[in-house]
Image (cartoon, rainbow, N blue to C red; front, side):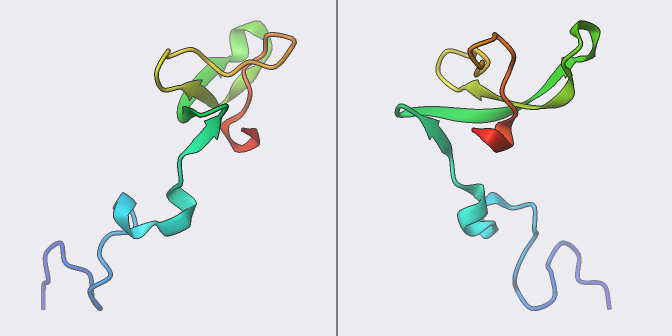
Length: 74
C-alpha cells in the first residue's frame, strides 16, 4: 500500500527541522546567530568545507589568521 509522503509510525520526515530536536539548535557567538554555508577555498589553499557565517552581517566567522572557521568548530 502506498502511503504518499506520510512515514510509517507517524514520525514524519527526518529532514523536517521540527523533528530534529536538540541537534538542530542554533549556534551563537557573543549572542550573534551563526548559520552554516558552503565554503570553497581550494583556490587559496583552504580546502572546501562547511563554514560558519554570521546571520545578521553575512560575514564569515574567521580565526585570528583570517581563515574561515569550520561550522562544527563554532
